Length: 492
Image 1: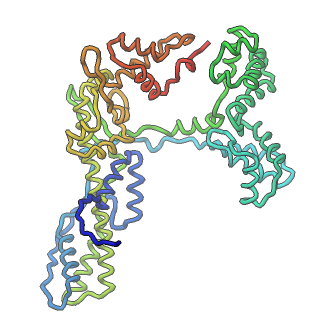
Image 2 (image 1 turned 60 degrees about the vertical axis):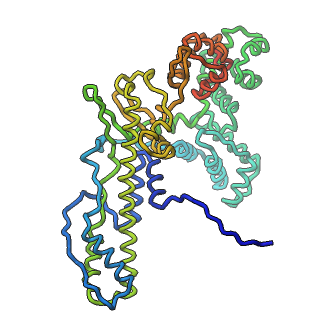
Image 3 (image 1 turned 180 degrees about the horizontal axis):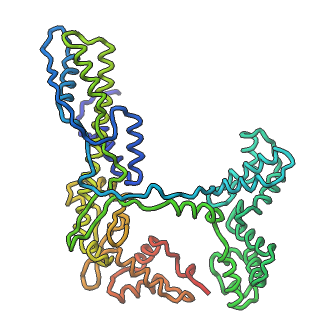
């Protein structure tokens, strides 16, 4: 039976302006310029440029009984906007910009797939059909250099996209030809095949040095790949009837191979252009820390002067008469664009204020580190600690810390790296988990690689240094540091 009920509940909703601020907070400085360009392109009422003097006009209109309420609202808006101070924001006076030499030449390099296409052009094809099959195969190779799609899937792609009915034998034959392209190992279906192709290529080219080790490495990859990946070295020695030195030579040959063929081309290109743009810069002025925002990608913004002129023209044109429908639509469009520009400028200002306030609190909280550069001085700090200091929401602090970098005299660090939980030592002192992780890395780096330390022994080493820690916690920290288990750290 249907019943009518009256209930009351409180719901908190974010306004479009608040959502815009939240989205801007997540954007790092390196990407902010692109977001501003998008806004400039979509809103003609917004423009770049420093604030200029704008004359204040007294355009108050006498009350007219012929005008309706919409005219009064528009008049109020026009008067309020024209008589208000120009809306703009400037960053040059209280920020620092990292200068870049715009005259530095950058090398134009081919991508991995472009390089494969170039080599494809050197082949002699019987017909255009085989060339399209080869192009489809190259297009299916992923960014690591592997062809993880089955031949039957490539045949389906050819049928739908190129209207070519290929045979499995044709596709497999073309894959074999592409696998001989440079870099060796390209178009392999998995790691085992990739390494085998590279090793066979070395042997075929007649590299005579360590030929015995190469042949042994080939046998290991063909017949004992699982034992090799799991580092069951004793089992390999027993199965192949070889000494430890022979096994070591063979494994050394395998380790010279490239597990990601595409990295030889794309990695160098990506690394040459990728650099960190810090969002904050901290200077040490004789023991006093000074914080500045890096706003090199945030130009000065203001409302377009032409929109002010449009409002003035409308004001004079409708003086003493009722506005037409088209005039109302025009002025409402202008109002919408001006309001949108104001909201964006306000959002940028609020973003800068929130970033500065948050980073300043972090700088003060971690003052000992920024003065000394000693990572052991980093205090345990969670999002709530900074939220309590700044009176901002925890989610806001999280957005600020995400993907942001701070530059000091000790290098650039991710803001997230300063947040850590606390751990109590045997003396009752609270230390940051970052300190424990650093010590754990040092212990593993200094271990005997022939007999790596288990998590239990790592726990004993840490407790010997005064850190009260459980074995499962050691395992968790080790995984967070991307350090494998003891068996996989073993070396001959």
